[in-house]
Amino acid sequence: MLAFAATTAAAGDLLFDAVAAGDKPAVEQALASGADVDSRAPDQATPLIAAALGDQLAIAELLLGKGADVMARNSGGFTPLHAAAFSGSLPIAKLLLEKGAVLEDSANKSGVTPLIVAGEENHVELAEFLIGQGADVKHPEGHGYWPITRAFWKGNTDMIKLFKRHGATCQTKVLGEANAAKCEAIHD
Image (cartoon, rainbow, N blue to C red; front, side, top):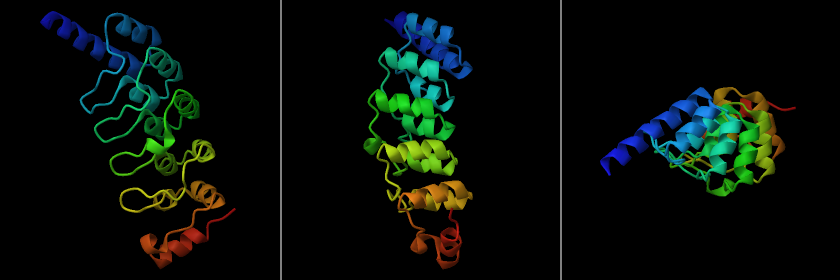
């Protein structure tokens, strides 16, 4: 039993190394050697989260084909969809939703949604896609900040314009009057 556990742990390490390197044949080999498709890194990230973070579409497809958990969460509650939003990978975001990721259940422990992540990282096309899939531009994270507020703090004017086109307004209560006025002055 101990030999099996050691082999599985080594295969899991090989799997994460292969995903990080974007090496699909090595991912296939690690899985064939017994790596768990949903093995966990120290931060509880899965290989699918790592693939989404690295914008590795072919590897994400392979992992999902082997049964990877599309809604797995790391220790901070981030899902593969958060990782795709962070990396700006529209193809992976589409794939994850096609394979069963649930947008409404994707907020992390602090209430941060994939839309908030896409907004902070200024991935406009991905944010537009998420909104089209039902992401709420007025969904507050744990401190009550809407995606537009966090985009404003990052200086992401194109994202602010997008959120406004979809009904978001600048939060005077959160931003203060001067910053809310600056936010409101941003328009198409």
